[in-house]
Length: 449
Image (cartoon, rainbow, N blue to C red):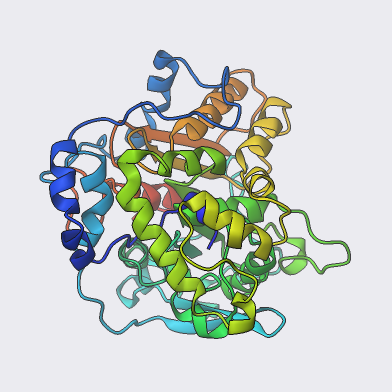
């Protein structure tokens, strides 16, 4: 599974954590920063100065009406923030989502779960028209029903939001479910896909997914656009899910292929990436550090369990025994399965950072819908350097008037770990990052809670 970003949302079973002594290992690390990691990806000279970095961390949360992030007791330090959802995960119950299957070719299908917006907000939302101001260009196709009540399949939702899991995750990952429920309570319909090999998609599709899996993602986005039925189509990618979505938005259509969405619409109308890797080479180096050895060991065991579910003929050419590192797994399995000649080629082609920086620095923009990147400086798995470099490039372009306002924003917090962001004042039903995502999406659709 697209190993280089090695992030999902449900990282460890609690029994595995305790058996490995990870809780004790984390205790002396709580509250401590990470040693300086490799910046990777040729970022020398692109990273902002310390004073510029502070500017990336300053005002966006306040603009969205939220307090700054402050770690919440007892989840101090990057590792406890990262593992909180696993240590406090609720027992999974029946999934209320409606199954949606997407054909992705060669007889394979992906399974998604569709959650309608909650009924108690229907009457109020039906009276709130969508805004499509030029500074936040959401699509409202001509001739589409403006009356939300005409598309009852989504329960009169404001928009459809695709929430995409990370490595090792699925539609039932704690963070995916929690964010999805928050969005539902605020009038959004939610689509929770399972990428190839993940969760309920395993019986329907062979193999595993990668950081760039456009041949699977583009049919999924086309189907989501159809389900949106004229409403804005938005997406949130958690960890590797954000990388997958970025690559899909940046991808060119294969020659002779039909448009990826009806009437040549954009693939997405808005995008949020939370703790998402932009530079896979830097990520593989980060996870290979000694302080991450237990994370890597667990991830490798999970990845090998995943591929062992494939048909015997699909495994015949694979090496026997566990790969010693994420990079080795990607070299042996991920890269060849997705047609890359080498792991270095996979990391280079599936890392969106270089393409994003090139577009911004050339004055061409991001080539994306309005987008937000949220990242913690102390993320133990995904270095913040790439997101900081992108934020600095966007700030420079905006200052020079070369970028359209509202098309790209970066929010970097001093803490939060990897997909953690459990902050003081959070309700029991949402994390700080969940609330940031909700506020950003509400701003895009031009409505208030």
